[in-house]
Image (cartoon, rainbow, N blue to C red; front, side):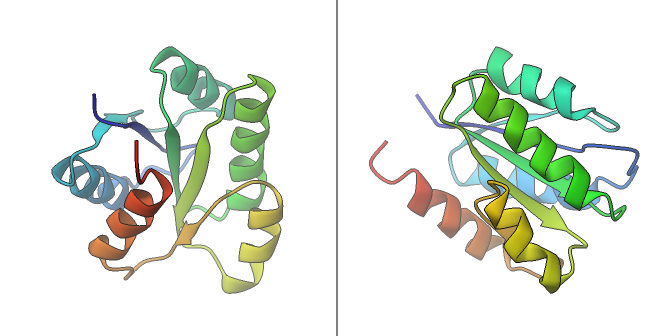
Length: 129
């Protein structure tokens, strides 16, 4: 059974082209991808991650709310007692990356990251599954 990954758009950001491109690249790489749709709360994302029994949650934010939304999703997923990898992407200033990693975000991918780098990172995380 392929590894299941949720790609989610937290907050009020209405731009999802990048999230859909990453979702397609992961699907093409052999992962089962669930897309949350737009305007999801962190609670909705965590609940969907549990309901879909995903191994990873990829978050996308272009609105500047990543410092609030990404850590909250990671916190809620951890509170469920599940071992889920949370990663993110979007317009994220380099100076925010360390704080996001400390908050439980495993990786950050910014605009222009080649898709093969994202899929290779995910492959490395789930190698052997």
